[in-house]
Length: 269
Image (cartoon, rainbow, N blue to C red; front, side, top):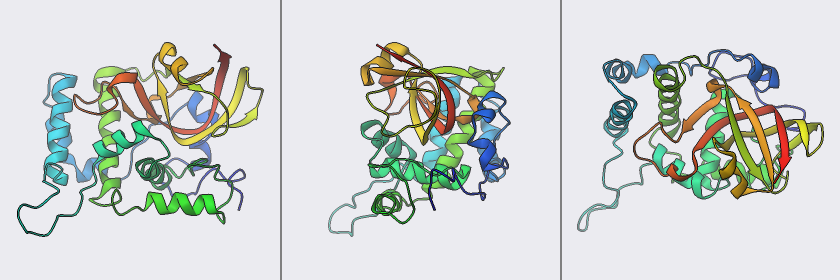
């Protein structure tokens, strides 16, 4: 089946039909999104968060909870002659790997998480993902199931990260929930499908199921000659620069955004 004809599968965990979630119409009139069971299974975290007094304190609380719950502070190399412990996958390690290369194995795990939770298929991973029965799709599946990064309930970690991000946006950063204007610099459109319009002016594009944006046009200019400007609903944000006190994406005012179809303004430097 062609992925161009099917944006995703119906078995998502957020309670909104995948076709709507993937559409530009959702971005114009977004609905609240919550991953099923996360607040119930991690009620202790959200009880703690309700008592904090600042975004920094909330970030520290979240990271301490994640270290405790998923044993992220454990040493990966055993002392002496003891058998080496298995590498523990971490949401922070995925963010770091994504920052280096969105087509890395860490990037594939993130794309696989979006596919699982939001129902959106990726459209690009090292190559265009045009069909399930293709070498490109097989490589993507191999990368997203890499045992090095697909362990330690990594999807569960990302679930909690998403819900913490949404909680923080509502509590501290954007309580009115208005969309953000974000920018993405590109040199070509190989990982972006142009659905309507041209490579300048107003266009309807299909983005990968997770994609990086920045809050600053000047930073986007460093990544490509064509600048996409999009209005992104807060419900589609997984991560942003000020969310946590300690992470590897500090330098670029970066936002990790759930993809799909977006109306964008395309301009050149």
